[in-house]
Image (cartoon, rainbow over all chains, first blue to last red; front, side, top):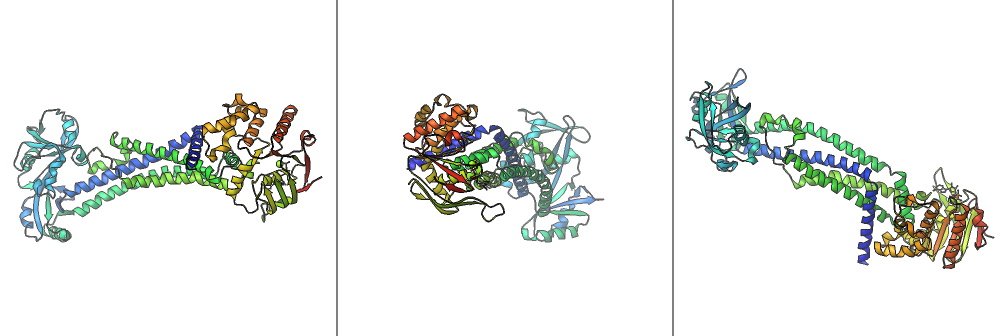
Length: 397
Length: 225
Ligand SMILES: Nc1ncnc2c1ncn2[C@@H]1O[C@H](COP(=O)(O)OP(=O)(O)OP(=O)(O)O)[C@@H](O)[C@H]1O
Ligand SMILES: [Mg+2]
């Protein structure tokens, strides 16, 4: 008896497979559209995940408050004497100067981000060494050493050499030994980065010893950030005081806009899919009706007929789902989301060209699954059900 | 009595504007192992009568007992199960799926019974031999002749060894020779113990001496001589 039930299901599955094969052209086009939609949605989801987590990761190292000096609305170097002026404000744990800027390499047209600061004051500074593939960050006084990102390594064509030279503004050369190389996982932040000592950065950019690019303020009690920020801007007029929250908000806003735009594109794709599914749901072809009628009248139960459609729908949609997700992973991981570059371009304002580790979460996949496979299944089974419950006679006329 | 209808009425689309009374208080009994012909003009209700006898739907009113089971108010699922154990259908259009092979069409009723492909073929072989279609076993049904199609339909109606064979205008698309061949096959099946009901207005059937009884159908009423 049990083996008979299994045999029956096998028979029905077998019938579904040959039925799919008989309508291969139509099914192939359905699979194509279906796979394309899954591919788009999954690619987008993986990129979104990886960007959000990268942005969050970056903020781990960010100070609670950043102070920039403004002159006629533009940022300019900030005098170090402000540090003494601010030390009186209660609640500040540490103020440290940072120098950063862009270095344009005329040899290959590349832009590097140069940064110098006392990294030991960063929160989670002990974790910084994990961002390096080999070597270390230059120590506070280790002049002549630099840690570089992977694209710098490539652009400078270093190979196994571990030294490089950069031009000062007066076109004299300054040589560095590469003390460390950042690893791939942090590409999004470190790809074009050069980290050196404060003294070297001053020398390279010709910045006098009483100036820095901005001041980073670390606060003991996060609850007091807003108060402290207000006190700072009162103490030194003509500065812009950015809190980590504000930076986070900016990230999110830009990201929100981008993802909003992308969502519109995705919705269009989804709409196409829904139309496809609706087209299926709204009507069976006369041949399909006739087949259901014949099966019914020769003794197939309604549930057996539905089982055929169920297997057909399940096989098609699972197939499309797996292929779509796999292609999406390959697209993001190996081809660096090349199809989405135009949408993501804005990110290079915040992040240099990067390599995305695709972010995959089970929850995302389940979400995509339930918004694609389930509706598709419904759109195959429901019309067959509507047709199969009307008595068999109408189908055999 | 194998087939027993008592005051059977069938109304299509009951209560709606397009309501049709296709059968009106029909009384009819058919004994086991007889060959009966339902004769009547187009629209008289022959197909509807066959559908009731064939357990496709229960009567709107009255009592119908087929092979010992009362159809009235039988849920659709049991009607289906009773149908596949009792009734073999042969339709005017044959109702064969053109994209399936001859063998697959013949054995289609066996799939939901949980019978393996091997066993299905074993059951189909003697039928295909008897009906001279063995050489077409693996042809698609859409690629064989009308006479062969008719025989595939007969084989399908017999595959589950059902006691009652119902045929709705089976010779409408056949020439004289094939129609005679069909009647010969039916007579043969009757000799094998089957009960056969044929709806037709083809004189080749209605006037055939092997028909035990001709039942006239007119405007949804039957006239048993
Ligand atoms: N599914 C249906 N819905 C509505 N009316 C129907 C349906 N089937 C049949 N009828 C009507 O019921 C009446 C009897 O039809 P039926 O098909 O039983 O006649 P028939 O004797 O088989 O005719 P024919 O020789 O043309 O096949 C006809 O008036 C027909 O229009
Ligand atoms: Mg008819």
